[in-house]
Length: 475
Ligand SMILES: [Fe+2]
Ligand SMILES: [Fe+2]
Image (cartoon, rainbow, N blue to C red; front, side, top):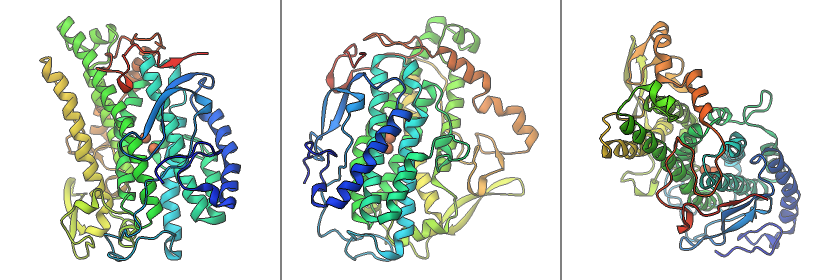
């Protein structure tokens, strides 16, 4: 079960050849996926040989194999963690019943929507990152970008498999639509806001992989608890791959900070103009990028008060982060949770039924996790004696969804009027000038072992290869 059959047209560990109809349907979708990849995948990468990891098993020990692969020939496939025939549902109204191997009729529409929404983010991020290879700060970073891109492509496969196998004709139509929407497109955009934003430069990209791929982690963790067992098993394997994406973001920002701090100490200055003239990204700009990506990403968890969230949980479709480890009754009826709203120009807490607050619960778990990494970035500054500290903004800052949408809140949580907001917004969110400055630093550096001036080399290479390894061969 855990080893992957690479001799088939579609590599898989789901015994695809035993279901000819399904196999044929997916083999028809495959060329459409490839033509989407040719159109929207990383620009100019078709003939490059890239040192990629490819899943060869779902065994947590040794699941991946590394080697140079031509981008176009990457073997996208369908991989699922092994099942447990005795698995029972561990939360919601069906708690204690056997997990579902098929979709119950009454949950069909909601499950389809959950899978489509998750599936839509995967190709969206590839589209958002399409141009970045042209301005890679090193060959090492270029390789990591491509690794993430091919894996997001595989995550799309993972969701498409579920749609094809379990949702009949509707599922096949949804699978087609996943290849037709485009990030940022006026008429046919991707489903979620953050996935229609641009990722125009590598600072944005590292922020995206740190903050927004982490949203992916939390969503996948919640789906890995699902009563719908194929979804749980699929998302568990996706999480194995996702860890690297967040590593790229966390280490990427850490390397930017390392380099900036180095120049700050060399020049003995924190003057933004002098640092920019020296070609590094000043800390206030990094803070504004954090503010932007954090706030846009926490919107992805949805409205603070949501009856859908309650339905998804009670019916067993989507659990909480680490559901199994929580010491409560896993039904949550009669419990409450605090969300924020504004009253008389003040942010105040409002107690609502826990079941309706589950988006907020997941958001708060996410905030804890993402703030921890910012703490690790601060250690970089602390170590070299720079007193500035980075932080995530207040969770009410710059929100577009739920009770806090359309009220203006400062990064430290004060309610503002429009004039106050407008006077400070350029200090809090990246301005056009900040973005232009960051863009001006972007240039292609791809000689093995060389790095752009604004970022420090990584501490070590990929898969224990040296930092100056030839991660990408240009043909
Ligand atoms: Fe993904
Ligand atoms: Fe990811």
